Image (cartoon, rainbow, N blue to C red; front, side, top):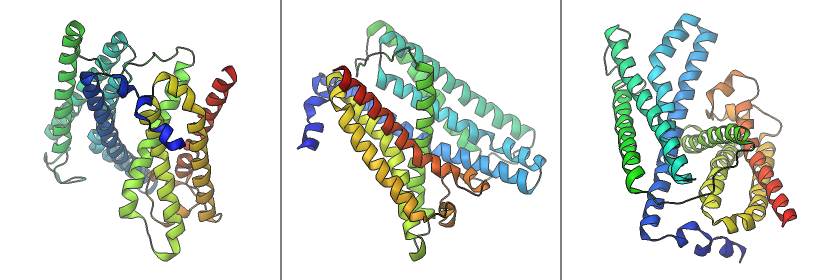
Length: 333
């Protein structure tokens, strides 16, 4: 009965929109999901290249690490390039006001265009300088660094299209998708930092869950470790999905009503997964390493998998924060 109440279509913003608004809202939400997935994979590539550079410093020398970093620069930049696309999509998704929409979307679109151009120029210069023996060296992908150039070109085109759309929208008001109240200025910096950290954890968790099916050791002795890591990773990205895609699509009245119940459910799931995680490890905090769970490669440079522990804790922090907010709203009500 409670779940049926949660998923009543009349609770969502979409139910109160006309046909054009619904279509735009669905397109924007799909764009957010697509860019989130792309950001997750480019983030993982970023981390693995960073791990290689750190490994070169530890095992080889600073010169080798610098050479690896220079060669991998397009991969590092590709993550921030993709993130700019996610920010553009999310700005349309939030749609706080026409002024904020145009200001933020334009800013992130320009960042994407500049980063894309920088990647292309960098690859050309490195090729001319002989640092890249070919535009298709074949590592880490079969057509690297050409794939980075093509990826950058795609985002430059997307950035230009967004700029043209914003210019036309400023006159004709073409976009009328989901409209939400502007974020409060009080504590905006703190919220921005926390949301960025939360996003990175969710990206981490999504890729960890996806890659785990290919890299985790599911042999008999490691089954508890493997299941624990799958759950931890899944909950890390599920938490973001629930609060960002489900909760934020509720009407303003229903968000106030459902904050506390959702917080309690979120907290219960997070606590259950956390308890299972530590029970599965049986005091062996190096468990994720033993099953080959390469979520965040930097974690393997320490005796304890701090990176994995952060992913375990993040959903708890989000859930507790939501619980406090829900209790506060109930008190004021």
